[in-house]
Amino acid sequence: MLLDDVRNEIRVRHYSIRTEKSYLNWIKRYIFFHQKKHPVKVGTKGISLFINHLANQDRVASSTQNQALCALVFLYREVLKINTEKLDDIIWSKTPKKLPTVLSKYEVSNLLKNMDGIYWLIANLLYGSGLRVMECLRLRIQDIDFGNNLILVRNGKGAKDRRTLLPKLIISRLETQISVVKQIHEDDLKQGYGRIYLPYALSKKYPNAYKEFKWQYLFPSRNISQDPKTNILRRHHLSHDAIQRKIKIASQKAHIHKKTSCHTLRHSFATHILENGYDIRTVQELLGHQDVSTTMIYTHVLNKGGMYIRSPADL
Image 1 (cartoon, rainbow, N blue to C red):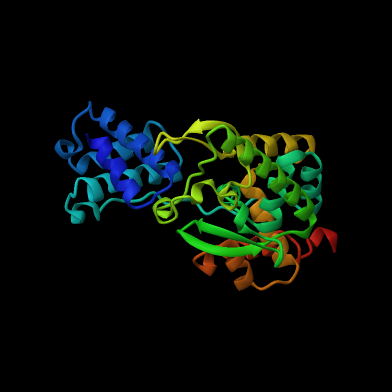
Image 2 (image 1 turned 135 degrees about the vertical axis):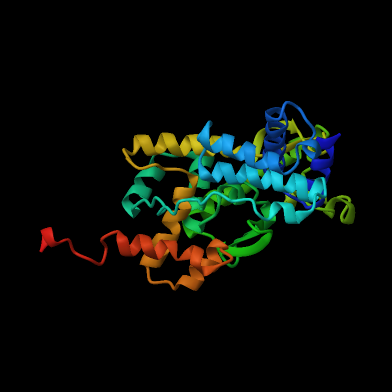
């Protein structure tokens, strides 16, 4: 079956489960758009028809349009093995360049005051360490280095590992959280669970590692659920959506009239650390950006935010 072939190719490349779901969804939509014709019969010309429909009829954002295009290029190039030269003329939508939303230190403080429990801890990691939300949720017990005040981010964006800061403010709360996770893990083992997901072939290399405490997620889900890749019942990490909802509610309580999300705290981390005088290369490494030009967006926020230039109305 075509979708099974797509799924296999995705898993061979170790793409995330979120990417897998996204690609499969777009490919299904593509097939239904062409009245369930096989993509080979439709040909690569069908991609342009579908993308034009998304842009003109559905009026999707350019990033969504490019996401769909990524899925279809993957289908034709990697699964169907269609001659790649036929795909070279495809025009990608130009994503508009936007300055990131950044909260002031006062706004961040108010936001955090309106959060509590585990969500307060996660929000402090997003802001204090500059983590992406999924990087934070995928942290495991062994990734916290209390001795050096560091966090090890494994397999971050671009399949890269990096180290970032561990805020001293949250150390005691983190230690408490680890104690809670240990109790949850021991209870799971007693009930026949406790088998954590291990990336790549680690489960074969270390056959008993999946039960070890150090591999457990720092922020485990409240419920046991079925792993979509293996159908094994296990405890996954907390949901991204739950964190986003809590931050949205907290921003409303704090009367922050900006579009605030999990990623806003990461933007704020980068901007504030630059304000404190750290060099751009250091910030690049902490954020895990491949190119320094990506990090440079935060210097634009500083320069265009009126921090160094006085308005003529105030002179």
